[in-house]
Image 1: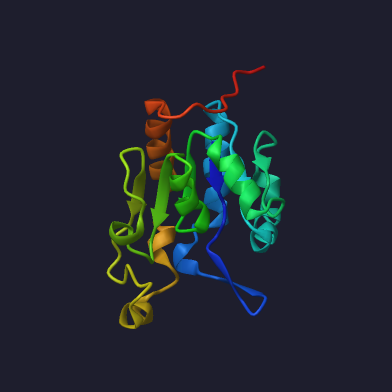
Image 2: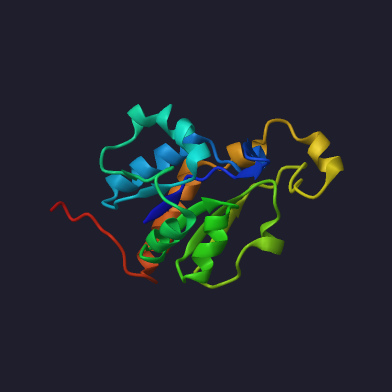
Length: 182
């Protein structure tokens, strides 16, 4: 099980910038990881160097059973991890699109981008999109002006993601890592 904690960062002239309308709050990534631990799974957090500080600032709330690889793997290494997992939960990031290519089921979290246009279409994939009046705003300057703090991502409830993730995991479309108490 991989949770893509990558928060939609991009690089411009060597400086990382965050794209809030692609970011699920860090607290939510930690909460979903902890819930999945309670369900007997071993979540793996992935993300780039720019994500590391955000995770570290909240790490005291993260279960010790979560494997934290944020900022510790290259994109290629991250994709190798994703390729062996049951499920990727991710915002609209490179990992989301790459996981589709390696056959890993994806639960995509969308706010500022339109999943009907860019989400990888496959029976094994699902997405969650909250329909805010200003969303999707990614390619619309007019809608970007209406955006008030990326409510589109903040309004994706942990419980909604948890329910969808468990449904997908129980479908068993991929083998995975399950912690059976050993």
